[in-house]
Structures are given as C-alpha cells and as structure tokens.
Length: 387
Image 1 (cartoon, one colour):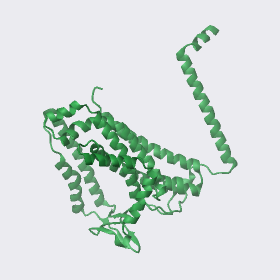
Image 2 (cartoon, rainbow, N blue to C red):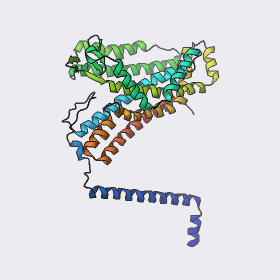
Image 3 (cartoon, rainbow, N blue to C red):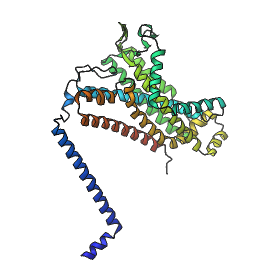
Image 4 (spheres, rainbow, N blue to C red):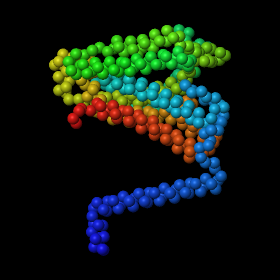
C-alpha cells in the first residue's frame, strides 16, 4: 500500500493534479475568511447591506440624459441605467471617431509625401505622450472659451444650435409615425446587407464587381427620409428660453470634450497598429496590385488593408477597451457617466461601497467582454481560410 502511494506521488500527472487541488483549496480558504471577516465588520458597524437601495429615491439631478426619463424623484436604479447609457454613448462615439482618425493617420504615416508623413508623425508623438486626463481638461477649457454663449449660439437652419453649453438637436417624438420611420430604416439595412452578400457572391463566382453604393443611399438613407415625410413624424425642436435652450436633445460640452479627447488620444495607438499592419503585408502583394494596373488608393483598399487588418485588429481591440475604461475620467469635467453618477453621487449618499462598486465593475466587465466578442468574431472572419 505504501509502495503504491509512493509511486503515485512520484507520478508527474498525479502530483500536478494534487498541487492544483491544494492551490484551489488554499485560495478558497482565504476567500472564505476574507468574506466572513467582511460580513462580521459590516454587522458590527451596523452598515446597511443588500441591493434594496436601488429602489430608493435618487434625489439628485443629472445633466446629461439622452434617451431615458429621469428626474430627482427617480430611483437609484434609474440613475444606474442613465449612467450606463451615458457611458455607452461616450464609448461608441469615441470608438467611431478614433477608428476613422486612426485609419487616416496610420495611412498618412506611410505616405510618400514628406509633409503629410511628418504631420502624422508629429500628431502621434504629441497626443500619445500627453496624459489623457490633461488632454480632457485642455479640450474642455478650449471649448468653453472658444464657443459663444447661449444667446449668441451658432445657428444651423434654426433647428440646430451650438454654444459653450453644448449642441442642441431636434428630438423625435415617440409615436406610430416614428416607429414606421425606424422600421423602414431597419428594413433598409437588412435589404442592403442581403444585396451586398449577393454582390459579393457574384463577384466570387464571375469576377464582376457590382457598385452597391446607390443601393445603400436608396435603402438606408432615402427610404427613411421618404417614410418621415409621408407619415409625418413629429420632432421637438430646441428653443431659447431664459438663459439656455429647452427641448430637443442636448449634447453637453462635457460630452464633446470627453469624446473628442478620448478619440484623438486613442487614435494615435490605432494609427500605429494600422501602420504596423500595412508594413507587415508582403511587398510582393503590393507589386502584384501594381502589375494588375490598380491605382495606389484601390490597391490599399482592396489588397493591402484587408491583409493589414489581420495583424492590426488584436491591438486595436485593446485600444477600444482602454477607451471605454478611460471614459471613467469624465468626473474631471463633470460629465455624468456611470462612475460619476453611481460610484460617485449615489455612493456618497447611500454609502454601500461594496454593492455599488461591484455593480459598476460588472458593467465595465460586461461592456469590455461584448466589445472583445464582436471584434474577435470579426477578426476570425478576416483570417485566411485554412490557417
């Protein structure tokens, strides 16, 4: 018996499993002790626990509210939802702008034109090496001082107004007419995707490329516009009342300062990822494109960039995640995203740090995992088949 036990202990696989079981047991023990000590301290100090506070009245106003109905009489749970929406608005806007700027600057870094190449290099070296918090404060100060007051707003067709407090846009009024417009927009997107897939299939089979831009303009843009005028969807227009505009959609200057700062900062890293991806493409691919008579712009679009993205996407995913998490710096300019509202104001009022911080971390974790899932799926489709 002792000999068999000894032989098992000298078995590498058995010892590996044993050490892993012991490691898990030790970690579980310390985790249990920490949790038990935490609950004991909470009980001794009479601190309220649980998530019942989510149904309590919030009692504070929120400056930025895009879609959800909210007032000081709303619950902490509604404030939590508003914080999530505001965070997503900054993240989505920042990712969109950073991708466009990063792509343009990354390609400009490889330009044969000396001036364009140097301008792109200077942009990257400046904005990449200044802390993002300082950039947020800088652009916020610039926006406040450069834009006019509410009474002297920059006016676009008497429907859109821009001033030092933000951008004011017409707001769609929810109703049957608006649902028809939204439905036509969704139908247009689905139809265009179907047409695009058929076009790609035809190109693979026959080599004939179909221009789908008119289909996009007609289905995705023109169809909703026609539906809007035919069914008469109503809009709520912003109007100057007192010292500020009322009605419509208000995109605060804090939102713009934060989204713009995150975009130009993150774009520097995306540009470098694009540049490295383009440089990783074999020189023979570029020569083959030139031999086929493709212009440089078409060669870049059809031959080089699709291959470059296979290398660039993994680091770009990291930058998207960093941008989303850096949105928590919004407190510096007073933009009311999740951390400012929930882990700031609600935490100061309620005091249940464990529950509030845990919920906030779970939201950021979920957003990051969704972004990773989407881009990893896209990256997998971009990989060369058979690898």
